[in-house]
Length: 308
Figure 1 (cartoon, rainbow, N blue to C red):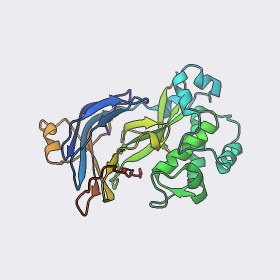
Figure 2: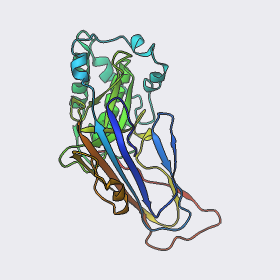
Figure 3: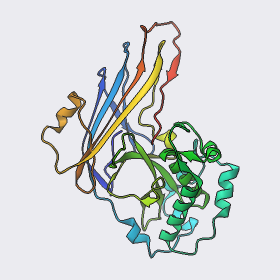
Figure 4: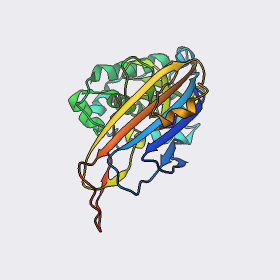
């Protein structure tokens, strides 16, 4: 849940607070994302995770850069960076299927510019899926999404990844925030590898557009399974539920009292080209009766939120 500083954004502040309180251990995963690890050893009925981030967004304008560039060959895209090979193969939620193979096979050989090809791939995804909530969940693989022909931003991003990888373009999943009216959940989009000349550039297949300053990157991976905002195990006799709230809004400058927000569960924000802040809070594991400890407790995996 901690945005990184990159060529396209600079993190000016990040806070994380848990209720009940717990000490945090931070590290980087294999994709370079920050992970905050904590353990609660005492019983609880509700767990709240509250984060606040302040981010200055200064995204490069890839659309203008690639409008005259020719479409590179797959060999050209991978020979200058061995790291991108991980984003060419199928992944746990972006699996091969007969329908995906049909979509890839229907694509014509690229003849236009890099921009033309990217727009074509975005249009293919838009034609294949209709946006609809509550028909898929955080664990729905791409093959099932293609059968349903409906889904949310997580599913659009997975299809874009499958199509790009099918034509030899390394592509990775992005979990993040978006400054858009009505958005109260995390968002998802893709980054495509343009070779050493362009690096990674962001496209939003749900909105069929290149990403602008309204998007804030939080984490990247092969698909959603690599970057869920929360993941863990719990034990006890309980029915688990999860609630997520995200607030994103522009600010002109860093408030002098911003580091006090975590103590009152305050507001969240992020920004486009000026400074902004983003927050996300979650509650889960409501226990309707006391936890009963056993000699051999069963561990249960925490629910995952779907990115809308």
